[in-house]
Amino acid sequence: MSKKPMPAPLATAPRCTAKSKRSGVQCRAPAVRGKTKCRMHGGKSTGAKTTEGKERCREAAFIHGFYVAENLARWRQVGAWLREINRKVKGR
Image: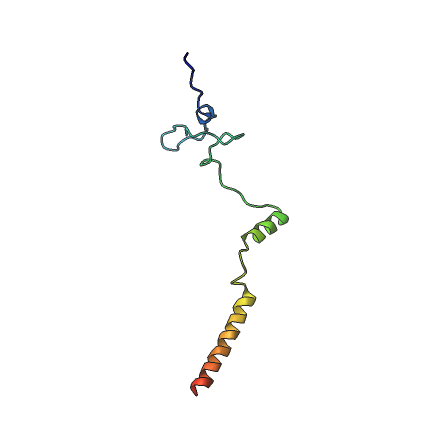
């Protein structure tokens, strides 16, 4: 009673069609589902083209607003007040 082993899903996956510049050898990594290239050779993103897409990217990159110009100006103002208070306390 011999059972044939099932091939691994990656073993039967289509292969990347990218070729090396130097040797001309084809990349043997499994291609991404529905594509002809692997995850390494998929190509760089060209970025958002529409104004809505660019706005979404800008909002997604916004982390916390810690270094926003208004906050920096406020910190400078607080720092100036603290320096002034320290000068008055020390009697200079």
